[in-house]
Amino acid sequence: LVRALARRCPEQLSKQVIAVAVPIACQFTKDISPSVDDLDDVGAVALAGRDCLRALSRAAPALVLPAVVEAAQAMSQSQDAMDRAAAVHAATFTFCGARDAPSGWAMPLARGLGDKAGWGRQA
Image 1 (cartoon, rainbow, N blue to C red):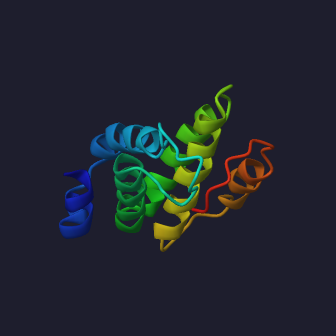
Image 2 (tube, rainbow, N blue to C red):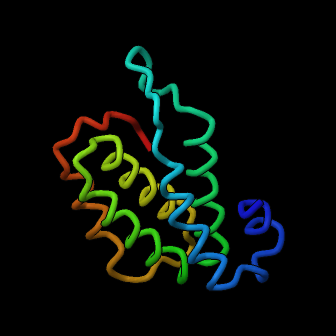
């Protein structure tokens, strides 16, 4: 629903909607049952979460990017490698969707990419 709203009526996205939707979409970027046989096989929920972040950041980059960076920073502190991988995916898909990224966005991505977790998937 939020993804459709972002695509069709971006002017309807309020700060409150983004404040609630972004952390949830970031959590959905985690593929909870990854395939060890095919790393490109990503679950439908994870794909939907990533697409939602891309649509949100395209609609309201100034509001979405800081919220995603905040959520990704929290996720990157997890002991679970899949949480840390989800943080990288959330940030990457958000940056891909943003048209007007504010300055300073590259450092959290660079830190995430330096993570030694074997997250293995391409964003």
